[in-house]
Amino acid sequence: MSSRFKVWDDQLPHFVTSTVVGWVDALSRETYKEIVCKSLKFCIEQKGMLLHAWVIMPNHIHLIFSCKQGATVSGIMRDLKKYTSRQIVTAILENEHESRKDWMLNMFRFTAVTNGGADEFQFWQNEFHPITLDNADKTQTRLNYLHENPVRVGIVWNPEDYKYSSAIDYYSKHKGILPVVLLG
Image (tube, rainbow, N blue to C red):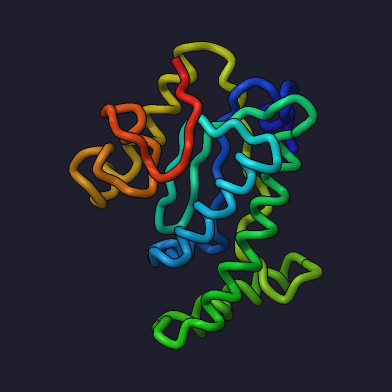
């Protein structure tokens, strides 16, 4: 990992991205997005995550978060990805209405074998590219990028209309489905 993507201070906000292997649109189903939300909520309540902003796209997630004392960005991301990977693959396996089941599982299995993984399936790409948000301009640029993502791909007209995002917390007086610590 290059020094550009190392975490130097876990208490500073970091912009991270996790992408489904092969850019598979596995997160297009609400049931799979809910697994990610449940895991994020657990990380907030039990792992020391201070979630500042988030969005779940069809094939990747963007997060901005920092950590309480004693927690680490790398540790939280490891646990989040490990748990969600297993839960989503299980949900796909058990979903008798999943029309893309065989194709997705073949992609996840192929990637696991190709990368020499210990698990039968690999859901997430290995890296998450943490970018430290150590000044106001960098922070605002990443917040805008994250919240505008569903608009850019045509999911919604306005950022705050997307359920699986913290945009509503930033652009309105309403609260979203996950608790966030707003950035100035």
